[in-house]
Length: 172
Ligand SMILES: CC(C)(COP(=O)(O)OP(=O)(O)OC[C@H]1O[C@@H](n2cnc3c(N)ncnc32)[C@H](O)[C@@H]1OP(=O)(O)O)[C@@H](O)C(=O)NCCC(=O)NCCS
Image (cartoon, rainbow, N blue to C red; front, side, top):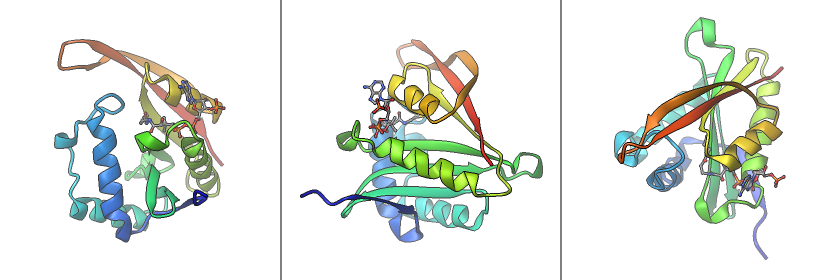
């Protein structure tokens, strides 16, 4: 029998697994702006980032583990300036082999629930490629509403232009 899915807050000790997950999903080259060589993915850098986020009351990183396997991660990065400290930017990813089985929905639900309990947070926001239909459907189902469409905001190496959507949700 498969181990059950456990969602818990990340700690610095998870940096290796988080770095591998992020590298694999970015290498797919379809969902996020960055390619793997454009961001700092070393275990040391991820560990520093996890430690920093852990100290911020408006930030949280949640991980979805199935036994020893990291199946997904969700980052809530709180605004660092006072005027935007009530907002957290959300990023969500599930390992390719684990998609379509409810892991993303669980992570998102728990991230929203955590944010609801933070008195300093009142808004979650994110950007998603408009053609990422699975993610867009998931966010809308979780109460995120469209705040805008950035037409041609993303240009692929072959010159093809893609739109992204800005979505947000009130919390608290
Ligand atoms: C987007 C992502 C996080 C969703 O996680 P997941 O575990 O695959 O999704 P779930 O199994 O929890 O499905 C949640 C919802 O997604 C939607 N969905 C799932 N598969 C879909 C598909 N093939 N097409 C459209 N919507 C789909 C549905 O609304 C589904 O709810 P339902 O089961 O009631 O129909 C995951 O697919 C992923 O990591 N993709 C690559 C990275 C990415 O796109 N991240 C978001 C960038 S902003």
